[in-house]
Length: 143
Image 1 (spheres, rainbow, N blue to C red):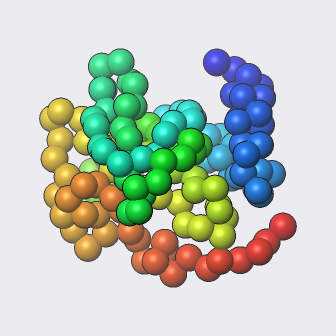
Image 2: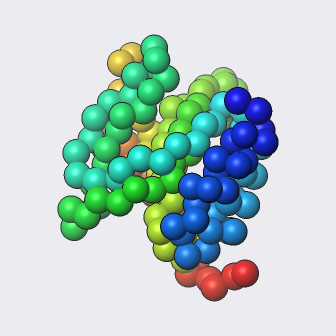
């Protein structure tokens, strides 16, 4: 898929967001910065399923704490990181809630069948990530 096709799809699929221009700009910037990320819309709801690394299909459905379901924009794929001198590609899903950017993105590590999520200061056993930057997310009304 060419960049223009993705950008057109993205432009059409962020229209339900109150700040759709900002959602589009941030998603487009992330996709441009990381060729390993893809975009989709999916239902964010109660149960969590797994990512199929063979077909690269993310069928993950995740819960809002109150059980709501919403169709949200999701950036997913491999995020390259360096850790202790080694390079890793971490499978992630980053969901944009409808209140974005006033609401913090919802981020998960989505392990494949050969990986386990190890609880840490920033990742819970379900793979949900809460980094200090996210914990201190400012609810700004930027344009």
